[in-house]
Length: 234
Image (cartoon, rainbow, N blue to C red):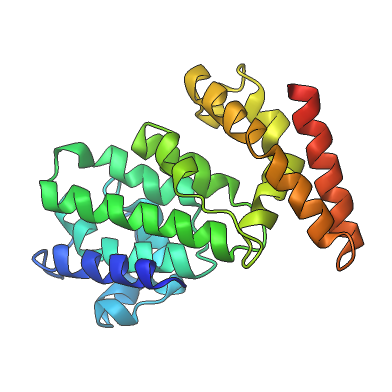
């Protein structure tokens, strides 16, 4: 985990610390059991794990508690989402922000979330073993623009950022370029920006090919395939 992500997570805790634990938080009796409630009521916030919070993260606001209740648990849920294999899908958790009209929250709260999302994205590009397509799409939706993500994808051979670029091209690029796939969340302007950004990485891919050719021939072949994808789209 990058220091930036650690700082961003701590800022979430600080920013949302004014929202207290609500022991009487109501939930739909058909959806929320006494066992579900017990899981999130018996430990301090920072000690709740993925098993404790998964049910709540899925049901938050819609059928369990209100927006202020969600803000209480938000720092820990976001910490688990960004640092563990949290069982609840990213689109579900981040979708709660839209459902809760987070654009109307205080400037401080919005900034803390934006800073966290960017720190998470940067951490993901550096440390994930493969390109996290869902994180990319869901953060893009919240930002409403693709440039912040691409501008903060600092690519080097010293971490996984270059390998994630190859994985994007190898596994997702064709799908992202299909304008008919509105479910992917990219509008035409963002697709055009992404395509130009990728084309401008051609020289970097060539450097990467020669860098990996003698140390990882299989990966070098993937780089070669990625170069073909770029040349074909150009």
